[in-house]
Amino acid sequence: MNRRTPLPQEELDRLCDLATLGASLASVALGELVELPVSPGITRVCPPTDPIRADTWSTGILFEAEGDLTGVVAIVLPEDRCEFAVERMLGREEPALELAESALREFGNIIASHTVSAMADALDATILISIPTLAVRDAGAMLGALIAERSAAVRTETDLLGPNGEIEALLVFVPEPLKPRPL
Image (cartoon, rainbow, N blue to C red):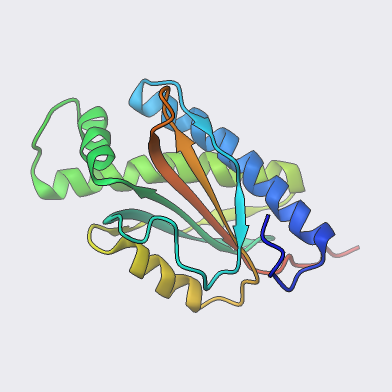
C-alpha cells in the first residue's frame, strides 16, 4: 500500500477493504461473462494523480458513483481482451461498431454493478452508478481527466486475472471522501 496519501491509515485500510471486496465480486462477474476462472489480484492504493497502470490501454468503461459513496469506477481492458469480451457478449466475431460499443457498455455495467453492490452491502449504504462512458481510445487519459475533476485522496487499482495469471481487466476505484451518515 502506498503511504503517500493524505488519509489516516484507518481510512486507507477501510477503502482498500472496500475495493478488494468490490474486486472479488467483479472477478466473479467477469469470469461468468468470459467463461473463464477470474480472480482478483492484490489491490494497490496510490495517489489519484499518479499515472494509471493501464494508461496505454485504449478501452475503458467509466462510471461515476453517487449516493452515500461517490467517485469513479472503471473497467479498463487490454486490446486483445476487448475483442474477446465483445465476442463473448455477442456470440460472434466482427460485429458492427455500434453493436460492439453497446456490448462493451453492458459488459462494463455488469462488472461495475457487482462491484458497487458489494461495497454498498458492506457499508449498508446506497450507491448508484451512472450510464457508462465508453473510451475506445486513450482510456487512461480519459480516466485521468475524470479523476482530476474529483476531490479524491486515493485511487485503487486491482488486476482481474485469468487462469494463467494474465490480466483480463483492470478495476479502478476512485472514492471521494466518505459522507457522514445521519444519526
